[in-house]
Length: 378
Picture 1 (cartoon, helix red, strand yellow):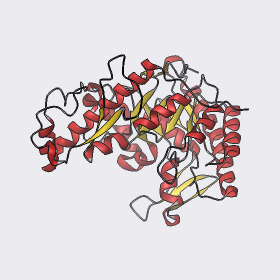
Picture 2 (cartoon, helix red, strand yellow):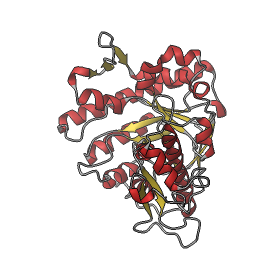
Picture 3 (cartoon, helix red, strand yellow):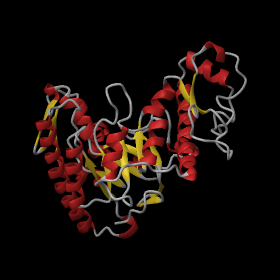
Picture 4 (tube, helix red, strand yellow):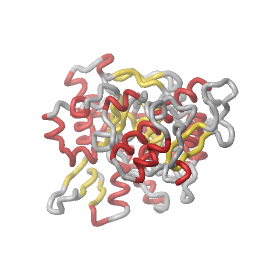
């Protein structure tokens, strides 16, 4: 096992991933409106792709023909591949006609209605390894929070069973390839259980018995009002030893990331920062984060809404404290102009700005070492 302390780094075949780290979602093999050079320019350390979507578009045969995910996307850094459990939640739990979940895996219909695809735990791992993933995620059954407790329990049992199958095929395939040392990818189990503390505990303990390089917090991390489920996230983290990294799947709001780092989480992914950028919500530090006086107190960051008319003639950059290529070169008024014209250049520049905010935020959090406050399991 080549994982290290969550306050340090994760050593992977395609480089070292410093922790904590925010990884933008490159669901279909790309972060919208950017390329690999753009991501490198703003310090993105790794990206997350999704096997559930990639097996459909562009398809496994195309990915293989193009040399795997790294060669296809021109990305030389770490790639985490999501298994598709959350996508099944979105697709099947909310629309029974789109497919079904059984002990064998996920049977679903892609956009071509006459075609059916089956994604099993074994196939998910096989595809992730074949694509060249650095961090493989076990297939899990993600459940809606409102699901009855009996169904939640069944989902946890299925998640654990799938995790054991995933671990077995992962080890077998790597042993067959004689993959060892620094070239060996890692595998994460995903802790499910909804909002039931006992189910979360049982799932975590069962996954720990199987043994993984790291673990993910599975399920929707927000309540019905959109607030972070801090207590459940903290409790779940407390079930996993501190030296093992945990991925807060789907967490990407800056304040939520800060809260989760304090609980001991090291990896984060979300489409929120890039989606906000495209929609005109641009992140900014309220004060200079490079000064010793900066603190993560109330109002430590805000959003600039570029569509506001007050920015039409603004000569200053989006933020006086930002070193991204956008703020170093362009006035905010130019971004307002691009946005109102709906030019694709806006999407690229805005995405670079928000991603640079996120990479600086992660380094700032690491340097300030916010005190962890997660309760320990009894």
